Image (tube, rainbow, N blue to C red; front, side, top):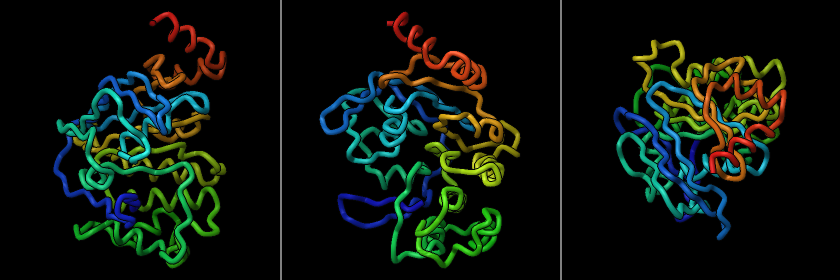
Length: 269
């Protein structure tokens, strides 16, 4: 979607003007919000074509991590680095990161009165000629009747998610950050949302031919039935407590809650 730039009070296009990106690497990242440390020494690595899942209870720092990667000014990096495509972007502005090819779908995106959804999708496309039109993207996302409505105004949870993914498909980011894409979505919509995410992450391409990476926050794990994530992380109290197969991690959480993850985090200190 278009990203608001607080420093200048305008919306900037998230169209990718960068080239091929190698990977995302988070190195010992600590982040504070309003002076309070939320993330503590977080490290992870996502290679081209990979999708990783992020689990954790409410308030554990998952959204803070995505916001810090995206570069929202409220989320202050106090230690560590964010490297994208071999470039240190730790101090890069939000709009610069967007132009480099990072896109995000928010759990609760705002209503934008006075701006039509069609205009937002057009801005996300920018001046780069694409292989599909706005109307074709809308048809894919089942959003045709919403193109001339104000952004997210009166939309249901599923409609908001489909609108966000339509905008990301227009942008074609190299790295997509998804904050609970199944939140507020019914069973009818979640299959379509899964297909849109798979297209966004180029899951129909051979692994070697993919350029897109994904980091997905999920509470329920329902989205993993529709997208193929290769690696999972559990975040507790601002730290990554474990890393492994996302389906195994989810099965453990469903059986034991986060008790085992707490034990792992304590033992590793």
